[in-house]
Image (cartoon, rainbow, N blue to C red):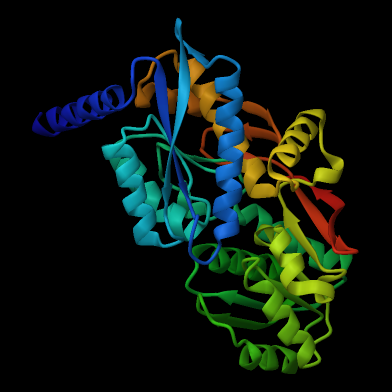
Length: 379
């Protein structure tokens, strides 16, 4: 009985916090993003996507919830791309600012610990870009707009076997990062199940700049292909060092590659390389084209996948708020869980009883210094 009373009291406090933090005619939503640290481009893209979604609603007169129209106020916290800062940002958004729901973090190494805060606060969280299964596994209040590493790892492994006819694969990944480690392990398992052999499985730690020792071991193992499931800020240096020691095999990557900085930092060494990601602007749907054109006009560059996924995350939240019909975290959570199909900028999402959407992946090839659509992989 005492436990039930505490839970009820906690929910009441949470409701009062939500009601007390916003004025009568506004809804406060949170963004927990990597604005500084190792991947600031990710945080800035997420912020841009959030602003696009919020400004569209406000310029249209607000969001109709129940019988009242509300302005949306965006509360932003920088998680510095650190797990402990992501946790602190989540606590601040839920308990100090009283947001109805939080979008972000993006990187799995930040999203996984922040998800525990969402659960304890009994408040909705949508991660735009986190693909690690642990972000949503066993969680009631946590959702995502991205596909999972389980799916992406299988797609990359199958693509390596089928498109490159690779028999022997090598992997270099950050052992300290949930994202890199998770997708590397799925790739190894799937590649092996498909009849291939992973002949080198080398690691490094976040912040390392010298990969020559690991790459030399990989070269000695004579792989047919090298998989780098690492972030855009690390991959160019890894590719350049691989080529420096004469490792000339095809190199493939994952959705952490899809940022313009990868092309700037990597230059001609990136030509012809391929990676999987969430959408391709050059095969966009009418919905996506409208977003891409508006984004480019406002920010002067095309949106990357984090910007698009953040925009989709906010649209999911707005839809749930309208379905809930009231400013109550539990009702918004139930509405999110009831969304079975959503047509977004990054494609069609289907939710079947969990916070993980079922959606397609695309393979991008780098040609003439640009990201070009190559093919689609369906679940």
